Length: 149
Image (cartoon, rainbow, N blue to C red):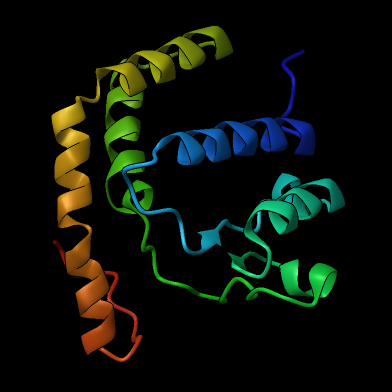
């Protein structure tokens, strides 16, 4: 049986993220860290890790209940991350286009799809990320899911 993503796996990914952030000396550091409300993201171990590195600069479901700092994940929040606006759709189209029929085939298709995304595509995604943020500001935070950027 395949290992389910657990809080320790989440912490391992966060440790890799933090070490990458620390290595990027020529780039601005992350000001706020935001994660969704997935159950493995809301454990005491994960919150302790986030508190140690980001302190009160975390937006996450139940995080303020645990630390009395940070910001709770807003209900019905717009999809404002590059992953929401590009990655998941691109991966879904590529992965499901291969019609995987087993978990091994699905895992392989996901890995191949992730590896096929070019650095130029990722740079374009990040360059265009400002557009939805500007729209959010001008719309006073109103919902705008059906707008194509």
